[in-house]
Every structure is written in C-alpha cells, then in structure tokens.
Amino acid sequence: MNIEELEQIAEGVRQENAQYDYEVNVCMDLACASQGADKLREALVQAAEASGKKVLIRRTGCMGPCSHGPLIRVDHADTLYRKVNAGHAESIVNSLGGEPVPELQCDLNEHFGSQVRVVLENAGYIDPEKIEDYIARDGYKALLTVLTEMTPAGVVHRITESKLRGRGGAGYPTGLKWGTVAKASGDMKYVVCNGDEGDPGAFMDRSVMEGDPHRVIEGMAIAGYAVGAKKGFIYVRAEYPVAVSRLTTALREARRRGLLGNDICGTPFSFDIEIRLGAGAFVCGEETALIASIEGKRGTPKPRPPYPAVSGLWSKPTLINNVETFANIAPIIRNGGKWFANMGSERSKGTKVFALTGRISNTGLIEVPLGIKLRKIIEVIGGGVPGGHTFKAVQTGGPSGGCIPAEMLDIGVSYDALMAAGSIMGSGGMIVMDDTSCMVNVARFFIEFCMTESCGKCIPCRAGTAQMYTLLTRICNGTATMDDLELLENLCSTVKEASLCGLGQTAPNPVLSTLKYFRNEYIEHIVNKRCPAGVCSMETPVEVLA
Image (cartoon, rainbow, N blue to C red; front, top):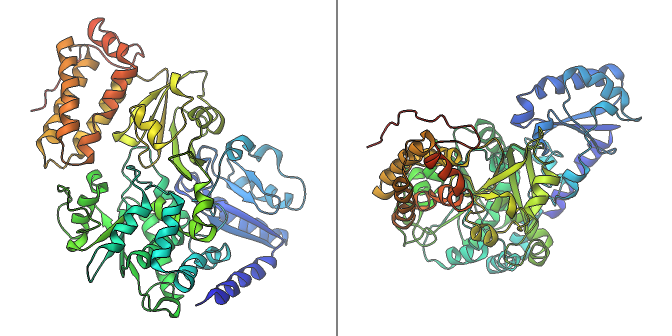
C-alpha cells in the first residue's frame, strides 16, 4: 500500500458514488437508532427502488444535534432533515432533485455555524464500517506520510508544534508525553487508547469510536511509529457494544489492507492493535488503574512515579492518550502543527468536542474552538434553556468537575479558565441546569457517584466521600447544622489533598464549586429548612454511612 494505491481506492469510491444521482446519509448513532433510524433507512431504500431514482442510502455516525433525531442529510443539496420517520421516506425520495420537504428541514445554521470540525470532520459523511469511505476522505494518508517522509522525531516535533493537549481531562501536553515515551529505553513499548468514558452524560468518545473508528486507529499507528511501539490496546467499556463491534471491523479491514500488522505499507514498521473490554469501573479511566485492568488485575490505581511513560503496561514504557486525542493526530500531520495551533486560545489550542446535555434545547455532540465563550455554547449552539425557565449553572468535567453559575457565562472555555472557576475541562461533558435544579442535590448526586465508584484502596477517598454524602443528605433533608457545613468543607480539603488518584483528588469539586457560587442554597436548607428549588424533601430520615 502506498499513496498512489490509496488514491486509487479513493478514486474508486468517487467513481462508484458517481453512479448515483443522489446521496442520502442516515444517522445510525444510538440516539437516532433508538428512535427508529434502522426502519427509516429500510424505508428509504424501498422508496428509492420504487421511484427508479439512483439513490445511495448510507448509514453514518452521529451528526450532532441528537435531540432532533432521527436525522438524515441529503448530500449535494446539503439539506438536513430532523425528526424523520419511516413514513416520510417516500416524500423525501420524491423531493430529490427538487425542493426540500419544508416541514422536515432542520434550520440549525447558528448551531453548526459556530462550530469548527476537526475530530468530527467525517461525522455524518462516511459509513463507519467501510474503510473505503474513510480512505476517500484522506484516511490513512497521514500514516503513509509519516512512514515514508518523516522520522519519528519529526512526528513528535509536529505534534509538539501543534500544542495539542490531552483531551482526557488533565490537559497534559501531548507532544511532551510522546517525547518522554520516545526517549524511554526498553525493548518493548506500548500505545494505549483510553476509551473508558464513564462520566455521567458523556458520549464524545463513544460517538467517535462508533462513527469514525479508523481515525482512532490511524492516530494510534502514527503514535506507535513516533515513540517506537509495536503494540497497541484500545480499552473500551463493555457497555459500548456498537463501538466494540465497529472497532473490531475496522481493525480487520485495516489489517486486510496492510495498514496494520507486519511491515506496514512495505516499510520496516510493524504495529498491531487489540481491544480490551472494561468491566464498567469508573476508576479504570485513571491510567494506572487502566493498566492494571489490561494486565488482568483488579483495576486500582497506584502511586506515581514511576509514570507509565517510563514504566507502564507490564513495566514497559507506555503511551496513554484518550480517544479524542488520537482522533486529532491525522489532521495535524496532514495540515501541520501550526495549522492546529492557530485555532483556540493562547494556552488551549485547537478544538474540543463536548456532549451538551441537561436542560438545553439542542442536546447533542458539538465541536468548537477552545476559547469560545460559554454563553455562545449555551445560548447559540445549545439554543438556550427551554420551557420558559432560566439558566442556573453548567457542570463541566463530569463528576470531577464543578458547577459554573450564570454570572460567569462570559468566560472563555479553556483549561486554565475552567480551573480558575473551580471546574475542569474533563473529557468534555457539559450538563446544563436551570432554575428547577437544587445545587445541593446536584452536589450530592455527583458525590454519590464518586462514592460508589471509589475503588476503596485509599481511606481518604473510600471513607471521605461516604461521609461527605452523609452530610449532604442531612443538608438536603433539613436535619443538618452549621457545624455539619463546616465539617463538610474540612472533609473536602482532606479528600482533595490526601487521596491517592485523580478520582478522590477531584471528587470534592462539585461540592466546593456549589459552596462557592450557591452557598445561599446550603444556608437555606440548614437554617430555614427550605429547598429554594423545591426539590429536596425536608425531615426525611438520614441513613448514616459507616
């Protein structure tokens, strides 16, 4: 396989598609599939056959505005239809070549106009189970470029030049991590893709793995070449069966085309990837716990140093990045590091994929340049809060993040700005809350999640989160005192400072941020025995956790 052969495959796809007069892409992501997208696709195929028109009906990954699904996109005209069902198939096919069906058109110009798609550039345009579709959109061109035209050090330099930071949460400079693994000594190195997406309300990585699996594979292969690794693992939650199936198909197709395995594309570089399933433990998103799980051990974290870059999987140098980080690699190689660094803010470059959920009109998947105002995400892309209610807060960063209030909507979304506000970027979850939300109850929800998901290895996290949950329950029930509030704040500091891994160290964030911005709600619960939002039931007995 070489660049010319890739182009031949791409040209073959273009010629095959040219036989059709029209292309209709059907979103088969889980949100649309759960609303009957499979039946819609079958109905479109039947309607096309009955009409005599030559129509390519293609299944694709997530198109973005999930709350408007099922979605279909008519190429050439670039018309997006929303809330489509099988009964609309005939009218849609009949409209091809003419005026669109007005009642189905999805007018989300502002929604898409504010976005910049890098990771999601193929979303809604390719069949994730056809490697040819991916190749036709410059797929694997970056891999062949690095294997035939670049040195490993040159690849690391380009990634460093891009100023890409890890998209898994901590925001560690990707080029620096790659350089550390590349310099580490050892006869065997590994590349690991962290697909263990466990944050409530998050589905960014799942959508990328389901909708564009070859993009992740190509990024991992480039990373393997750059750091000197021959083996890769994709660690995926077992709760993501569609992602596992499509990744399995993609790996098989890549091997068949000579893009994985021994002597890739006729070069001395060999690299292959295996899938490992996680059992659903949230803590396995932490890299040392993830490594233990891949090794067949109980998924618990261990102290660092040594860091995985020096001693990771089976005590060998190991590069760990998350799904979105690897999905950024191919376009950076194709377009250059400076191209990527020209997007975003001063210290947070490029774009970021977010899962926008909660009390928001347009729930779904978005990709925006870092530095964008939070207000633009909520009010323009998200369409604002529905039902006549007012925006109250947005929780970013999953259970490890914090709640940002309405008065801070004009901050730019970047690693540093979110941290200064008492939250974190995390992997990209954004949960919007309106005036019907009780912020004390919100904090209790996330502490309960962290308490349940704690591996129990260290006492500060195991016991501290349990006691925090008990205190928050007392506050919600109206049985707490101001001494309990003081104790809660002290516990937050202890858990944050003394926990072994990131789960415990960041678990207090939802409590600390709600105490900072919504302290009056805590006082109302304690002093006046009243929940301002009317959510909490007062004087309910409290189950004390030992």
